Length: 323
Ligand SMILES: NC(=O)c1ccc[n+]([C@@H]2O[C@H](COP(=O)([O-])OP(=O)(O)OC[C@H]3O[C@@H](n4cnc5c(N)ncnc54)[C@H](OP(=O)(O)O)[C@@H]3O)[C@@H](O)[C@H]2O)c1
Image (cartoon, rainbow, N blue to C red):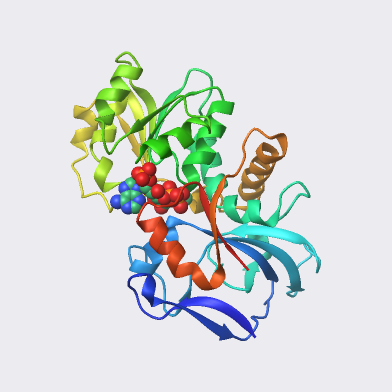
């Protein structure tokens, strides 16, 4: 048997139950992974609460790492015993998962299971946001909300490595201090300060080339006021709630702005894209340019507590479930 965190109905963390199920079997093109660690992501909250839709019952979780324990028909990419990590449409809060072989990467020796479980989704998100949604480089001035979060601490270091001026926001003085140690040049406590005024002050009125906004309702539409003319608003999440429908004319009024709503799965849908992104992440980790701060870890059985802490803004950096 194999343990997994399953939801049978939508709701609060209390709908998450630890259950025994048969060890799943890999079908054609799939591998069975005996898990060592799983990553926690805000997207898991969206699926638990119904912001994003999925069929129930559902094993939560979209990021993890472990050892290949079984191979489906036609899989040549992996062998039993390989160390692998993945992200995507799987139930990662479990002792075993079956995933498409094409959705997994072989783990370099330099990357531990815990680091991989903390970064395959969050770090590859930082990769596409900073290298492809907008090509960040020397001279880029950017604002990244929730800078002390899982994606935020990775993105700060990566953006600094690319040569940008990196401005962040975070929800407490302690979180601001943490973000400043992870690549950010300036961090604004947006629970106490007007972040639009502070961005204008920090940039001498020039404002930002790109704003990465995963907070959603609470930072919209103020994020638009942090952009220079023709700047890019990348709305990639909604931790505070979904943004209301808006009139596109606002983009004209605020300076001929661009807007995009990207997702990791839209940037890594093909195997070459997935490999390019995961290899870039592993290179950043191996070179030491990016560390993956794991702020907290919980046993699999305590996944509901981990959700409560993530939703109440208690966590910093990445959160993992140990298995
Ligand atoms: N589109 C994509 O491809 C993609 C991929 C990965 C993640 N994401 C999004 O990126 C965001 C970050 O994900 P993560 O897993 O790394 O989470 P996280 O940043 O570790 O946690 C969310 C953070 O959002 C901030 N926040 C602001 N208002 C909040 C509220 N009302 N309730 C809860 N949190 C609030 C909190 O930081 P402060 O206290 O500092 O404000 C909190 O720590 C999420 O919105 C997620 O959906 C999108």
